[in-house]
Every structure is written in C-alpha cells, then in structure tokens.
Image (cartoon, rainbow, N blue to C red; front, side):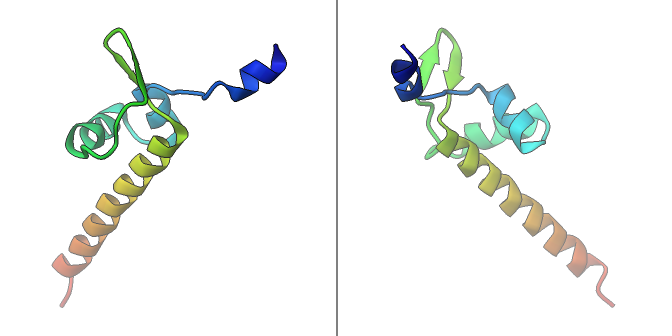
Length: 79
C-alpha cells in the first residue's frame, strides 16, 4: 500500500551518498571507514546501507576536511 511505502525508510549505498554530495566514491569510503560514529542502518549481504542522516554527516565531515585544506593552503601562501 502507498501508506506502507511512505513509512519504510529509504536507505542508500555508499555510491549514492557520493553522487548526492558530488564527491568521488573513495572520499565517502574514507569518511565511513574512519568516522566510527557514522554507522550503517542495515546491510544487504556485503553492502552497507545508510539513512539520510548519514548522508548529512558525511557531507559535514567532507566540508570540514575541505575547509581545513583551504585554510592550510592560505597559510602556505602568506607573505
């Protein structure tokens, strides 16, 4: 039924997370491997599936890394 489908959470794969955020697959894989607080909601065989909340957490972590990189580059070029 339509109501049942609306209540089922939509889970996404690592590849879908990368696509949504607009970053390469390996960056998402690195975040998920090193940030133990971002856990899969379920597994389908070997595949890990994540909630939308995890997508937001991965986006946050990548934004943080990119901000630090930009900061460091700015320091390197300081007079």
